[in-house]
Image (cartoon, rainbow, N blue to C red; front, side, top):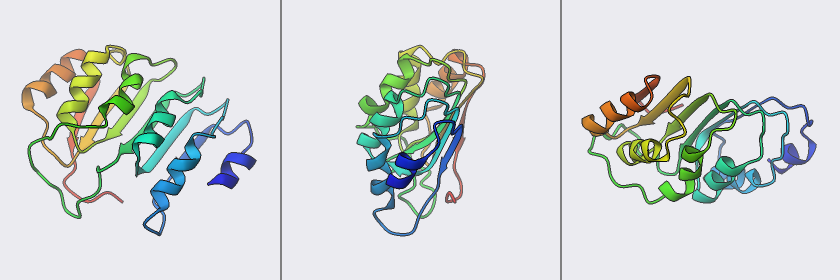
Length: 168
């Protein structure tokens, strides 16, 4: 990951990070995110659970051309099987909340979260994502139906997806 950060061309437009072998892979990737300065980056997709610090770096990164962002929050894929359980309050909302208050060039957002109701409420409260072309909240937990309806009223392009199979 450090090599990518150092040697990636400044014209890099699309970056996808996928699962890797080893229990510390997500931590190692996350630790390098703070150094990513890709001025031409348009799409960033991270298919591993990011720590709070890594999320903070992603949502505050200076990627002026970013239009598509997809990531999973810590705890999203912990369970081997779907946990169709009521949502639990998210403690890490403060790390991702700055994204919901500013969009810049962002047009498409997908978030994997263990706390879909809390994230949906934070998105609505942030106010800036009302006009995204695509807004997906994905989880293995059940989002409150009333909050889901409010999210769709807030952004007609929004949808909630209950993950019924393990990611990957």
